[in-house]
Length: 165
Image 1 (cartoon, one colour):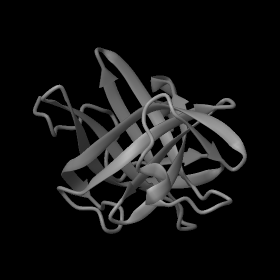
Image 2 (tube, rainbow, N blue to C red):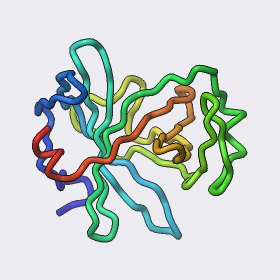
Image 3 (tube, rainbow, N blue to C red):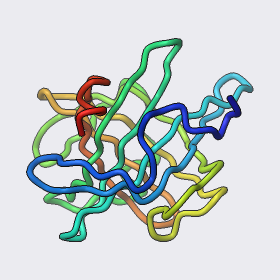
Image 4 (cartoon, helix red, strand yellow):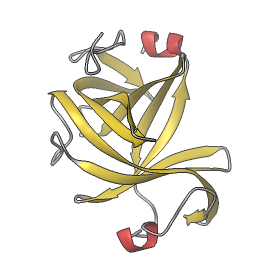
């Protein structure tokens, strides 16, 4: 299997129901980060709802452990800027809407491959910095780059939940 092949049962055109809304998979991106000189890849499926919502279904294979995360766009109560995020690193804390979150990862991802419809403004070579935030039973990814700052609230799913979506 090539590094850009789809290793999942999810395909563009598939539909699913999540939180009472119907979502259609409209695209797939292969993203990567460079760790110790090697590029690590994962897939993110771009989903849209009839009401105009956008979400991402992330698939990662971490040394044989399959991880699925459904990411919904989250808009913080207070605006967050690139300047606030740029100095953050793993182990730091960040206050999001009055809740302290620990940063468990800080990295930079690049889009290496796109099938179907990507999010607006995203193309091959598009790169963002990001942090993973964990706290209070919640997890978020915060990305910042050329298109601004975006927060995504993540929900881990088991494989059988994904195949039932």
